[in-house]
Length: 336
Image (tube, rainbow, N blue to C red; front, side):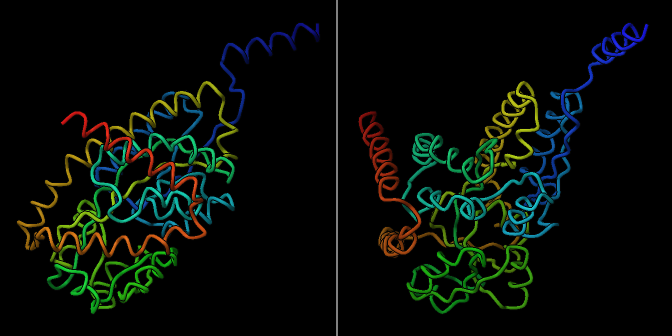
């Protein structure tokens, strides 16, 4: 009799679809503000996680840097207060500094060129993230970084007297700019707006969509139209929480994350020029550069490479990135 009751209870549990693991709530941090294209896509993606897992995997999003900047998010993931984050290349570089090879100023000429190199290095980077305790779910775009300033700037020389924002958690870049004669001011991302308001900083390298989303352009209302880097981003979760998710659900999460990454990439690339036009309608002045001034910025950028790469990116990884870049350029030249 007792055996039959136990068997019946086991059958009932199977009928009700008792999960193999307890439900997981993934707390995700992001700098993306509510209403931004990144936040909207993130909401849709996490809703798909819940649907794909039958409610076993849910996400709670903390937008707009509400739980701190990216350095804070990484620290909180490491102590278990967060399980994931959507990070820009600045935050990703705190975990895998080697990613800096994708963010060298003026090293890449187009979206397609960076896409090609990144695709060729994705397996290398994702393996490094896993070794350091994180799983990459998708890659995405932040946009082409330009220079936004409170007064007109067209050449590196005219930027030097201004107080330039740099990420407090990225001393390598701050040091590179300081060595080039710029007045770097380390601040947290969450202090950028107040820094511009108070005059603590006069200039910021950022992409147009964030400049519009955070309204920085309302104070830094001059844009130097030089493409410095294509800032990238990624959604990551801790390996600790990733291993608790059933394998079949992981596959569905990766599929929805990949779709969200592609959608974000397409939307941001389409919205970038539109955002510049919107800012121009609201007082932004765009300064176009002559070929000579463009070359001056490129020369200044090349001077920073030794500082940015030394002790951070292994020479063989730099060589691989360069080979992929030249391979892409060769193929593109053959098509022209």
